[in-house]
Image 1 (cartoon, rainbow, N blue to C red):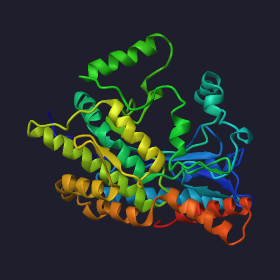
Image 2: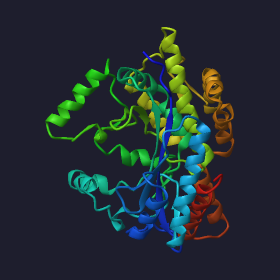
Image 3: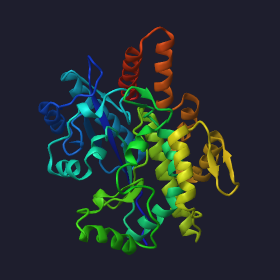
Image 4: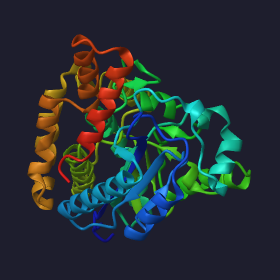
Length: 376
């Protein structure tokens, strides 16, 4: 087996808000998307809802290359949006807009989704971040997918940016997961012994006419059906660019660590979805605040301690990729909080200073607009 290239690609979904009202726009200006497509050929596309837009880096050999591209994509889309009286928000939910006011993009694939999933997909006013790691060998992708499920809750906890929904503090750091889990074929992946076994399961659904292909299997991590990559999909979109780059470094280093174990005839212990889902819920509910379960010890471990364990496990891999500082940014996230923490804090501070509920929510949107552009 050839050593994987471990190339990296990052996709982010942004929300488009009206600069004056701070609400999500129901209809995207055609001229805006056309201008973005002209400037970012092949790297931008509409999303299911017209208030969303997706960007994606090229295949990158280094994390610095991926960061530079992502910064350019954010800046370009934000600049074009501003010319249309709009602003770009990198967050996984909007603090107060309601799904009933929004329209989906008129496109065959999206029309079919709207027809198939009805009210479930109409609630899908959420955005995510997807990270692709280049692994050419099909069986290796499936093998690493099964081992990687363990660490997915850790990545979700570090990324949370969706505490509000329809004007309310949900009490969850990633309410996006609550919405996403109502979709079919989501959540943790199954365990498969080989790519052939995985493909046979996909083919059952394709043959039955339930799905056209594996792109409609939306697990937290999956073998991409379009690229020779293992695609991580559990994370919220990070409002700050440095947080996004940190999680990309985390995922890339973890994949390399698992491969390194394999070359030494070792592997990460396999835990049941029953157990991993408990940590997935804790990340969904508490983010980095309440720790995750160490299954071997049978106890909840505080997140700072977990992060130090992760840094020790993958330090060799971070040194290999030259991304130690990007990975150690996890400690900064622990100190400064995720986007979800800053959103709730901004709302509470606005209320404490005399703002009404609506004004406080608009202050949260202003925070998101500003932080989306930090570091670009």
